Length: 471
Image 1 (cartoon, one colour):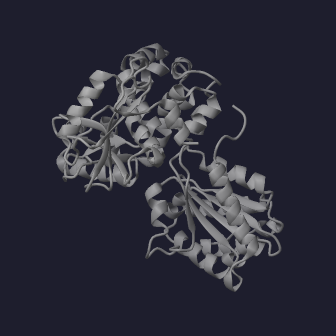
Image 2 (image 1 turned 180 degrees about the horizontal axis):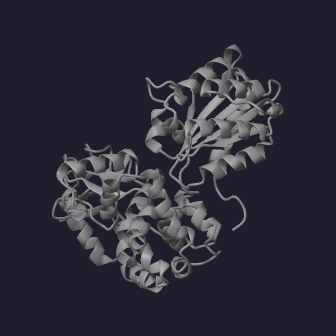
Image 3 (image 1 turned 120 degrees about the vertical axis):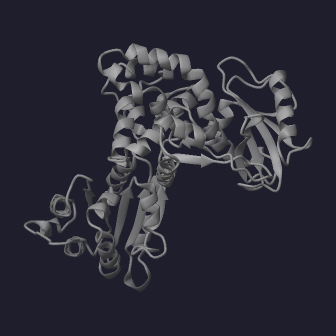
């Protein structure tokens, strides 16, 4: 698929930063830095490439790798400098810096003084992993030389926790950079990119996770069922390979974390059931869950009400990885031996039930973007459940989280192809509202339905309403 879809907000932010570089800074320090983070394969590198191409500024683009040594990183950085579009790129030719202090000083000498330029360091966490001194070297170089140049330093990383930590108090680069989070393409972007109606666009988002690599191979106008029929039979499709590559990059040696993640991806949500499925002792399970949540691979959710609860549930944060773990990861061998038809049949059997639960998080996020259509004082949206799932409420709106002072609304999600939210669903929602701590007869009722809402007494939302929230 041709063209660059979405990312207008991110491109505008990068361009504003360039304008600040051009405007100069206090005490002769026009240089600026950005720490850009986002999940693997959301298109961070593609965004950076699009930005430097549109800016028409001289730039250096260097990508680190986990498989390199510090010495090889230095050599390839110099090669990137020599082949860059910086006016003084020739300064890199024949140079062999012994450490990052020398390499970054060489970079500063090659940056122009009379026009803005851009330096992109992609996958920066790998540089830090290969050389613990890189972070300090970057801080010294930025303070002494780089910030005195009219340049924008763009540091990119997929390790969300590490990229967040780089700007924390006590770290060398603290308060020297702005932060930018690059999310996956959102459901409205997916609808535009694929030319799909709103309901199918949400389904396509659940399958693709909004990852450009998958959407690029998705035929225009194809429904999720049509796309899957083709992609599942191709062992080289982005749909199949992206999940395995992401896991290999995140957990190259941590088998326990992968076992726990597989259990969560298979549908287990509680601490006890995850531990049973992963067959791990309590201590090992706790370490694996902490690693997964620290890396933002897994979300730990608690019920939202006016009473505290310890009924934590775990879900895979990324929609595509959630789909991949549920339907693809364990069945790659049968796909590779030409039996993708078995995998496809399994998806068809489990799709409706899996989709109904997987769509909950994106529905809640969509509602957060519609504050004018929610009750006043709604500042948090979550769900509610008990140990026995009686009741289990899809949508709880409140004034704050995790323990609310006021419940502002309760709601139900019915993501079925043909059946609307009807009087039976409304009766059940009334019952659940009566069982929710903090809710009463004045608490507003919401219904989100793929096929529409056919009864009065609730505020209804359709896929079209939710898509509009992202535009």
